[in-house]
Length: 319
Length: 313
Image (tube, rainbow over all chains, first blue to last red):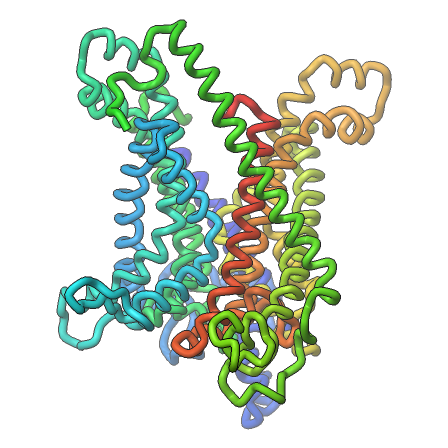
């Protein structure tokens, strides 16, 4: 409960800093109009007055915050619609992409880390840790280009004349929902976005499980004569997964940043691509809305991680 | 690979320790080897960057008007007859790829090192103050790091560079602006690290002794405590150089980093996507340079962590 209350001043501080950065830069929210020859100085003054920009900055901020709290984040000049609506419209696509990547990362990352820990110092372990190092060092945008080059431009040949050819852009080919088509479009971007998380999760899972395997209660379980399988799945995994929960929550900023790049390269109609478009058109209201939203998501996921952690591990107490 | 009957740590104590020490020794050595390999590769990269001018076969910004006819020239190992003497081919406007890669190395390494220098300076000073004095200074500085750590860095950086680009009279974002922005946003991780070391260090006897003989705070912080907190800073800084190189290349790829015609590995890839089907080389080589450099630095960082803190396996 106190943790929840603590995140409120944190969010306020974030909003003040973001507001300070974005709205006090040259041009400010009127930048798109300043370059328009049809907008006169009088128009600018009128717009400034209408937007309350002739008032002191703290007052402007409080007014703006009041609007944000009721879901009014201003008007997006690049999309000609309210910011809130623009973000909400793109949210499902981003959720689809990030959700799929997250799922892939959890499944592959945790099983790879598990194999790595159980067969420590085997060739398989070295292969997995080396791949994880590559995954961590890979620039996301370049990996995306290489996947496009391999699977979309050339296609991977299979026996009997078949070929893996995947679409490199967009979320679907048709307006009506077609699961196969949607999945086909999802494979490349989701694979690209999940790479870094797979690397992170597998490395973390490996060290976490190794630590658990070395504890006394595991030794006790082995002494009781339980089979290795039972020890691993009933006692080991349960405990090793606890810290991994925290890491999955902390990986959200990376996932959001990766989604911006992935969506841009794969022409994915999500929030990340919306953000890049807004960036190119100096749409401050939309940029602000997006930054606030993802900062909120990050704070919320950290909070969630703390709560889940305390729930899973009774030794941890927050007060 | 035999299925393990017992996990490490559940075996008979004596046997197991013996085996473990042997095993750790080999892993250490192996990791060490990887770190050394990383160091050698990085040294070669640095040399290539320093001597880019002497090594580059062409002017990195010159367009080959003799051979280039509108489409990127292929690398010589692919089609020797058509490459026009460009070892790795040219980009979409006929500039020598190898020369641009060499000059791009300068940008990547310089941005990486200088941004991390800024980050380490800010982070160390603030972290040291927070950890040494504690109390309300510590509280508020740590809340500040919370704020910075809660805003995803890449989107914020993109917005900041876009704002600077829009507000500056010059059309180009200068090298210095990129470095300062990246460095100024990355300090909280370092600050937390330094603070954590200082919290324990200030309670140690030698710190008390330094205080007792009448040293002032500044001297205690920089002469007595800081040298003992260097190891984690070095590891973090090394790994961050790798991170910054990726960040810079990402910014440049999206058009908000180093501006053309100056070659950077990131901006060389900016147009690669639209030419993916006709010029694989323009997309493959710059990214490969980033990957190899970042991988080397990460292995060095990992080796350093192993060497400086034997407790973390």
